[in-house]
Image (tube, rainbow, N blue to C red; front, side, top):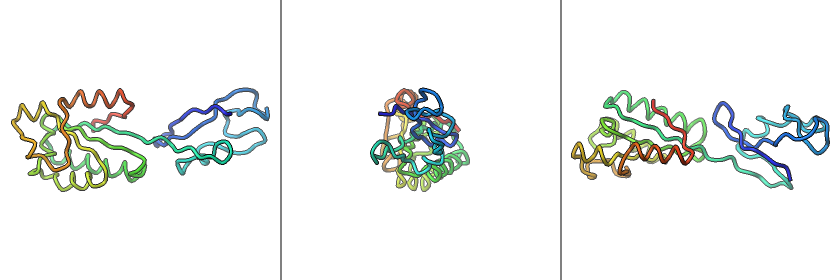
Length: 176
């Protein structure tokens, strides 16, 4: 059985890479220089489709990427830029290969209200599988009832704690 590590390239794509053991031309080992014993090429080109043959024809799926995005600004321009960034992330990685969660805190909570100028974009992103989370502490402080939020938006007790938990669980944190 060959030992492998999950490795991420510059585009954020994940793939399996054999653990290096033994000399380069040893029939039982991989040298780590992009070829197997006998000169067979391997590496990034072998993993572009998100899967790689392992063992006796079995296929291993690449791990799903997870991104948590913080929004804490009251700027329609910024909100729309973030929505475009989310669409770009999903277009590059594929919507089924990436989980995206946007956490709105403080003045950024306005993005998730039904009267927001970004409401249509948020609804489109919800339909594309993006998770939107409102900070419950901000909702209390600004006296925003749950009914004022766009349908489908979740509420967390504390937005920053939500981001911390996601980071501890391996989510990538972005604050555009």
